[in-house]
Length: 87
Image (cartoon, rainbow, N blue to C red; front, side, top):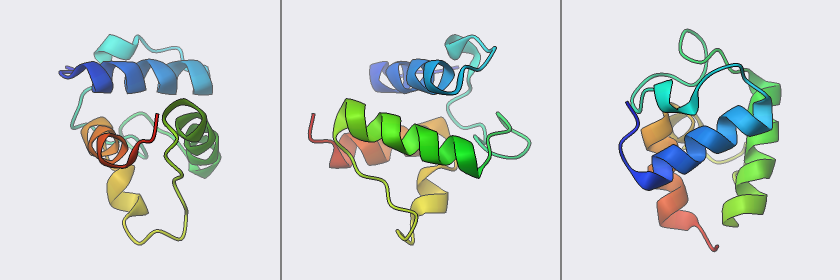
């Protein structure tokens, strides 16, 4: 289950941005966001990156060598946003 407030907010952002038919509270913090997890794809990553930029002021770049690790789970994404956010 989602633990931190930031993780809860990001889970809601993911569901709203990507119009997923999932309860944000059911997104596991350590579960994969892509593939077997939530099943997100590269287009979802682009949309989510834009929403994160607008919401938190954190510019995610596909050229970042850590991008796969950042998008690996809700917890990893929350840690990256917490560290790099400007809003």
